Image (cartoon, rainbow, N blue to C red; front, side, top):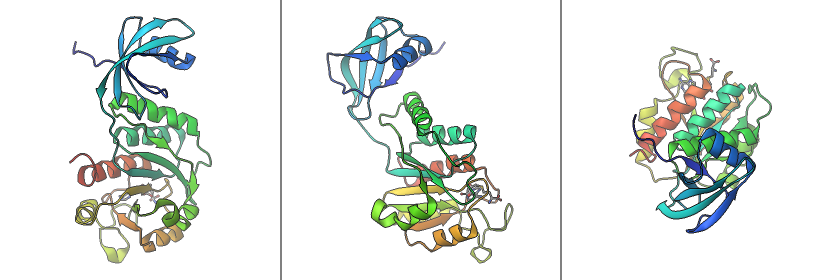
Length: 262
Ligand code: SAH
């Protein structure tokens, strides 16, 4: 069997050498029952601020676990300044989108309600715990933030006040639907590689990627997005992707060309 990496755990507490931390019940349960740790075992801990540390389980029982923090293994580093904005989907697809955006290195994930969004609410706490588990598993040192949901119209109205120089890359499937050739005259956006490579030549700015709901953007929403001077549209190819697939495709392309995969 291949050697397993030492398990990692996200903690909210400050991390310092030679300090003891008492884990709350839920995290103690995770450490003992899910990660199967026992007194004397090593774990790695991070809190999104103080880097990654080696710690040892000092004491463990059903109600609580005590860790002793030993030495710093890695200094803090962050994900690139990329926000992923997406219209909430059915539960399992929303979960998938949040988990994958976290693994792929989004810094902030924000639900956005559009006219055709099917789901009218999100469970922010559940999404935050999915993002935390993804961060624990994928070795990132920061925690993706699940930001307050907003309505698309409000987001666009207040973009510059709230987001400053951040630009918006919106994934725009062809108006004619699947198979419509890429061509600006029939309303299709430019291909992703062309768009992203051109952006690489412009001064670096923070970015947000916007993915629409399963029903797509309303024509008024699309028109507004296309007119906004902070927004750039991009096609993800001649097939219509499910929104959760579009999240993965768009974040991967952005990371490879403008982000930290370089
Ligand atoms: N309006 C479509 C479905 C939308 S797919 C229809 O019903 O035919 C959901 C979202 O994924 C879209 O709003 C868009 O943001 C993104 N998306 C899916 N396929 C895409 C593609 N080929 N190019 C760009 N974006 C795409």
